[in-house]
Length: 439
Ligand SMILES: [Zn+2]
Image (cartoon, rainbow, N blue to C red):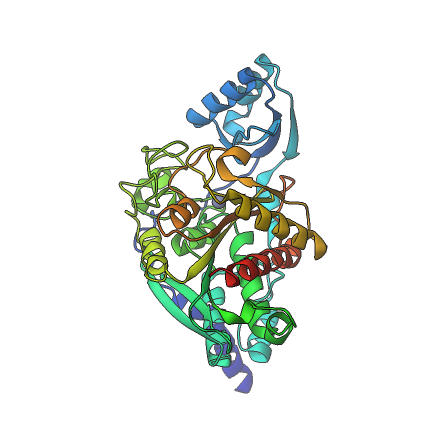
């Protein structure tokens, strides 16, 4: 009898996230989850204009997806090729004598090896022992992550609280964890978000790692002799694109956009990081809904980007820093993204950016390149960072591209969560220190 009861309890606990999740209103019916069996990740030498043009044309025709984009200072491009296009793509590359290496031979295998399954026993043990289901040795569903934010607010009510700043297209909450240290004057604040792009799983994992450290190891991080970190409020939005994130877990690991018009299959979704309202619709964004960089119907047409901007704008006078985490490439980028230009105070941004990179190395982390967004990578308009700097006038605005540099790309194995999370935390603390010293 006891045995049967505990089995029922286990079942209920296991099903709980699914029962609590909002109904998937717009899921295309009957579609099997996307398979990447036989898909390859190629590193293509693109050192001549001929090479680059060929890659651009292949991308526009939908034959490949450029994971790393065509970056001016880099000689190679990471290119995803599905098996039905392999012949055509390789033929065209050979024709212009673009050399390539196969980095991942079968993407589906990489996807299967990326995230170790947590056993039912371990999950129940965790829940019982810690009061939540989050770990940082695997990538979790949104219910675990949101459950963890609620757990922190309940466990440390003097220190933090959860604010829902809006809802996604499919009605999922955009949950922000606010940390308000006892020494905070409420006159300064820092914003940190992750997961605007759905498939960049390391971003929500690292952002949640950083907030876990700051809350659960509060003394260690806030009570240093010189530290002024405790003098301001912190706002964390670990999953800015909850629908897209769930879609990457349930249907298509490589989905990037939000889930607007989900019935439109591969033409669904808006790129939320092209939907912000500063220089919206310019270079590096598209009006074509089928493209990965679709800017949306208008600036802030999407509830996710609108909610972020409304919330941040309401605190713009106290917001001193805005850090948004993406992957991959290991870059610390400051505005502008819309063009190869820099804001008047770019020296300050560069100086603090370099300090972030040093701090990352000092915690045993990897090497990050610092520079302005459009010059270091490529122009992209409608990004949240340009809006934060240009419209909300937030001084220390950064986009951080986390690990790696292309060995695994978006499919970074879960064993890298903790080391990457430590890098994110080190970077955040440097920005926060600079922010806290702003007038
Ligand atoms: Zn991204």
